[in-house]
Length: 236
Image 1 (cartoon, rainbow, N blue to C red):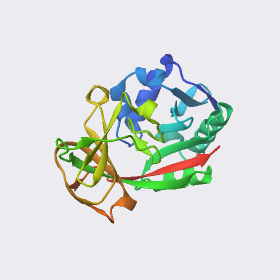
Image 2: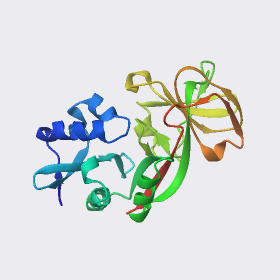
Image 3: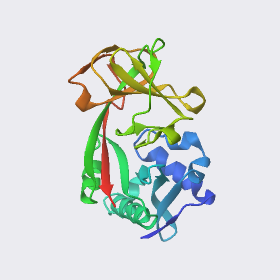
Image 4: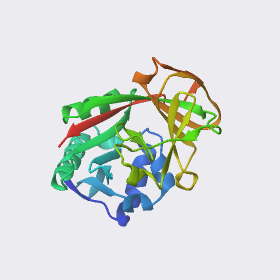
């Protein structure tokens, strides 16, 4: 199988694979600009695109993998494995320190594939519908030693990188990160640390590292269709 960088002329095939792959089709909704933001690689056999994977470079000098899709007619041929390994190699060539990926805990096949490629689970994130009331919270300094979700990509960020894009707010004994309004595509908040009880309401998405749930109780409904996911990482 030949693996190459995708071009705009590949968009029809990428969009079609995304639609029929059996996953939530957020890729087609983004449109052709999906190809220009980051690097999309495609697998190709005798002129037919069989699958694709997106690689994005994060500010913490790591790479983030997303949107791994294989055409149903070409599954069980090792295409996903080859695309993943090629993406990891690209990260090494670019001098990145690690590569990460987010996979639903229900997606056992993708989790096992990633482990075979050398990835290890470093966190389990739980997702809930609704938003905590933080309007009376106070702004605090950014947290630099934890994985922070920015645009569904988890990385370690510094104040200089986060300042223009993310607010850190403390409400009671709990610290949250929130994407600033001009940066948001949807209302999203991440619970960073603390202890206590949180009640969720209204529109939006709230996430928390599962390890924090011993000290933080959440009163809210799990997010429909995506209740939990692993962050997996491979050191380069």
